[in-house]
Image (cartoon, one colour):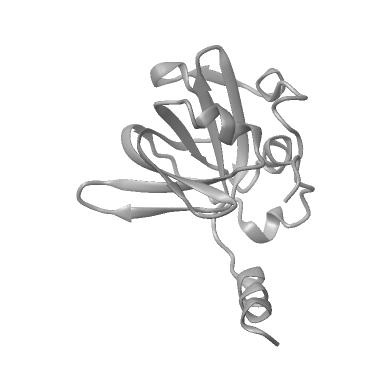
Amino acid sequence: MDVHGAFDELARKLDYSMFIVTVRAGAQRAGCLVGFGCQTSIAPPRFLICLSRNNHTYRVAAGADLIAVHAVPQHAQELARLFGSYCSEEVDKFACCAWLPGPGEVPILQECGNWFVGRVLEQLDFGDHVGFLLDPIAAQQARESYFTFDQAKGIEPGHPA
C-alpha cells in the first residue's frame, strides 16, 4: 500500500467531533456540516475551521467577517443531515430549523447548545479546503455529548467531494 492509501485508511478510522458552520455575508446566509476543525492556540484563543472549496458555504464565508461554529449534539442527527446533505443554493436550511441571529446577524442554531462566533483573522489555502482562522468573540457552553465523524459517515454530501 502506498503512503496516500495508508494515510486514507488511517484517516477513515479517526473519530472526532463534527461541527456545523453558519455564516452571513450581506443578505446571504449559508451553513454546512464540517469535519475539519480544531483549536490552534490557548492564549490567545484561536480555532481553525476548514471549508471545502466546492461548498456554497465556503463561497459565502470567503466574504464574511464572522463565522459561527456549532458543536453538533449527539442527538441532532437530522440537523447534521440537513446541513450535510443539502446545498444552501438549493435549499433554505434555515427555514427547516430553529435559529436566532447572533453577533453580526450570523445564524445561531437553537438545537446546538455549544457554539461560538469567531472573527475571521486569516484565510489559509489547504488544497481542496480553505482554513479560516477564528478569534472567538461570543460563545455558549452546555453539557452535551457530540455528534462524531463516525456517525456522519452515512450522510451523503450535498456537494461533490
